Length: 316
Image (cartoon, rainbow, N blue to C red; front, side):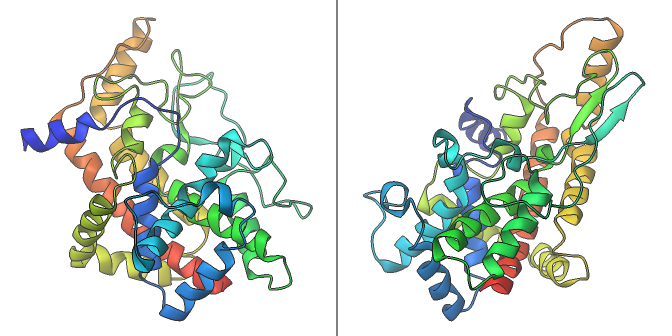
């Protein structure tokens, strides 16, 4: 167990806040893709080929070869592409990646922003001031519209593949608002430093893998799919009434945030720092915390994959 944890923590290096890291987005997208029929997969690849950045951002790396492996890499790249686009002013949409609001509020005199409402009727793919739930609904509408240019539908696929994953990452569903320490929120656990990674948010981002590695994605996908109870629960969650509502996903992520991200050992340290009016010291997370976090990440990945498959299927 100790060796496994050391290996896990060795990949949790500091990097820009990208929700699940590259490996995690590839994993969720590949699992979703393999839930689609062969015809749906072909249609998805046809639309993606019209992406406005297909030549610049979708060239497979040298170690990816053969049509099947290339197709899997391309759908994984589509899910990761919105993070690639952060450096492209025309396509970057920083607010789309997270939801405003509180996962947990402790004490008074905190400033929790209002939860975003429905997607504005005037919203387009160029609208920057949207958040996860709004952006998901916008992109579902774009993908379903067969009169839209294929390039728009390709962008919608990328954002859906990315944001369905983001919505299942507990740190992207809201923040901790703690009187005396985080009155403006902890930015989804970004302000909680840890020895295992730069901060608690980065740690959660890396629980499904860091950089893309085809073998690692395949291994993780097989492991998750082999957990029959989890796989069945995820299947039923995508099929139940309201199962494709992004607010449902975010509410679930909020529950995981309260039970797993802001577990007692985190809240105890935060409460101590607030009481003593000092900065929060770097936390050395316990093995039990890391194990529970890893299990939670696998659950969220399975649910995200099934819901992403269903969302893509309805738009094809």
